[in-house]
Length: 105
Image 1 (cartoon, rainbow, N blue to C red):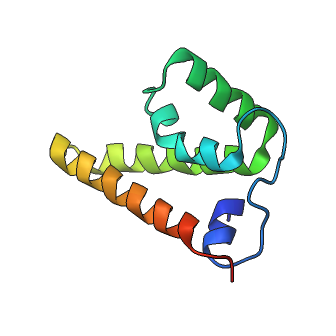
Image 2 (spheres, rainbow, N blue to C red; image 1 turned 135 degrees about the horizontal axis):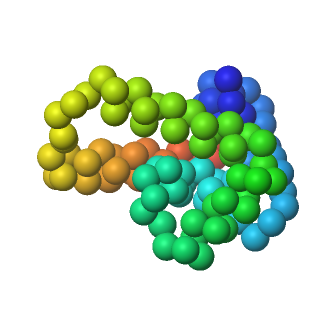
């Protein structure tokens, strides 16, 4: 289980385990889908790659995303409509904003 999965499961973990570099873990994890899908510009791609090179928990999370993407690619041969993808990304953003706004218990 990755650090971020532990965090979602309620295990106490630091918000930014590596605490180094110019990108926080929360930003790196937020950008992983774009990174894995090669949708980032050069500067952002390089920042995420540099963070992943220094942060094992984020690298583990990236590897989970890569495996998930590969499983979906192998299992689902039909293409989802663009509007569905947009709605899913919007919902994920809403959930992340809600989680960030909740006070730590």
